[in-house]
Amino acid sequence: MSGLWTNSTLQFWTALTGTLFSLYAVTNTARFAWNFVRPSRLHQYRHADSGSWALVTGASDGIGFGFVQELLAQGFNVLLHGRNRTKLEGLQSDLQKEFSDQKIDIVVADASQYDDSYKAITEKVRTLPGKLTVLVNNVGGIHTTPTYLPHQDVPHDDIDACINVNLRFATHLIKDLIPVLRSKGPALLANIGSVGGIMGVPYITTYCGTKAYMHVLTESLKNETVAEGIDSIDMVAFLVGNVSSHTNTFDMPLTITSRQCAASCLAKAGKNSEALVWGHWKFVIAAYFTMMLPKMTARRLLGSEMRKRVEAEKKSG
Ligand SMILES: *[C@@H]1O[C@H](CO)[C@@H](O)[C@H](O)[C@H]1NC(C)=O
Ligand SMILES: *[C@@H]1O[C@H](CO)[C@@H](O)[C@H](O)[C@H]1NC(C)=O
Ligand SMILES: *[C@@H]1O[C@H](CO)[C@@H](O)[C@H](O)[C@H]1NC(C)=O
Image 1 (cartoon, helix red, strand yellow):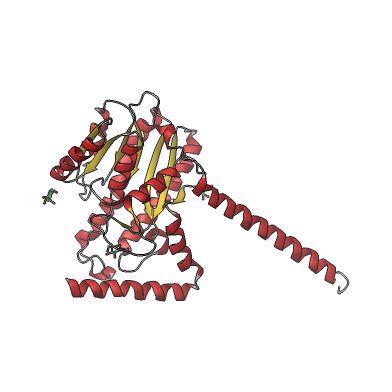
Image 2: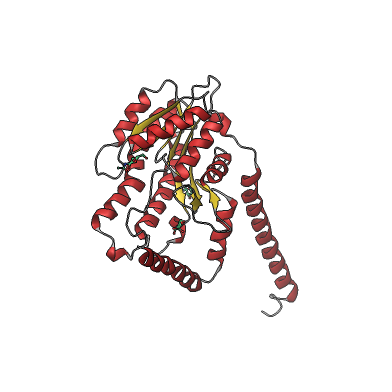
């Protein structure tokens, strides 16, 4: 027995395991890094006839508005969805001055209701002068005041609104728009996910749950395109973190602007075998730091960080 498990056998297996593990780590890291440096393929969705449209839901502010600006800058016509017509019209006329070569249109629908308001969008898309080749399902939010609450204290209506806006609306809209995107490919279907959907942040529990849903929905849709032999639609969910915008002026070393976030996400579109893609390297650093800690330490840190926000809100409000 002792002869079989000699020093050299042990050395051999240790070396082999070590080598395989290193190779695996190196390959993974390289593939991961490659995603951040490869040239953008966004132009493949802007078809030569230049009638290509992008639809952004929840387009009035935050990351949604960042996507609008970036898509216009990259030569797409853009359809903005929001629930406030006055606000959308204001944005439309401002943007039209800045991007005079592209067409800009708006569509109003309240995503928070348990109804078929998404149909307004499908109908609008049908009347667009040109083809829809990009869909960005961005509409979402936390939908409680105060923002941070223990789950038991969130009003039932707020829970419903959060679920409707963050996942129900997009799920129905995607169903209606897949045939449109499919017939006009190459097309991009992008869902905005969240670091919260993989970290499980306390005091915004429903929000985090809905984001995890969006991640798995995207994975299932992507796998379904393979099952169905659909190669004209690229599906992706971008993992994003907190960004600063005119409605969100949070400042942290790792905080980026909505526009930077959108640009970085779009640069990664259409070249991923993965369904879940990190939107910006800064989010990776913030999240990995937390994920590398022992579980209980991470939970305690996240917990005390979030409790500070609960307290801060109590004081200010
Ligand atoms: C809609 O937007 C306008 C212009 O930004 C604003 O004045 C108004 O309060 C908004 N309405 C609602 C219901 O939020
Ligand atoms: C994001 O930034 C805002 C803006 O100040 C801040 O109030 C909020 O707590 C942040 N949200 C998260 C989930 O970190
Ligand atoms: C579906 O796709 C995801 C990646 O997008 C993958 O992680 C998952 O394993 C796939 N399912 C199967 C059965 O391969």
